[in-house]
Length: 200
Image (tube, rainbow, N blue to C red; front, side, top):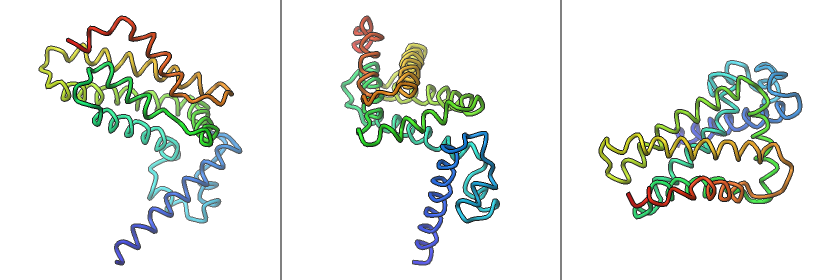
């Protein structure tokens, strides 16, 4: 019971630090906020902030990582009879679908990630790393030997690059559209001549 209480307390503190940091970033920009200010807003010490987050950027990057985790999980769950192109594009569309009442908040998070060259660099690194994970999942789904490894890596790289570009365009825009719809349109263009790959 005591262990459960400590766990819930830790989650509460982590969420409070994260929420306060994001509020400050929205008001003053990522580069204009210090860890000391985050700690003060959250009512904790700087030491406590670092107990939950190794650095200031980790607070922001946890959102990007949660999206990538959802993408990997969605790809793992796709029907086994789907080819690699269909499975990956549909996993991206599924996880990018955003309820209308959350689109403003999601766009704000995207703008925050794009507001700092350092954060953009870290985000790009996370995406590059995810391509290897996606390729491995596609290989497991097809029980593929090493012969198709390069093909699957190319598919994962191309689809991920298009997804990132479409996502950034959606973040920079001001429409209330669902980003999943923009992704679906872009993937249709990208994969128009790829149909044979799924059957290979």
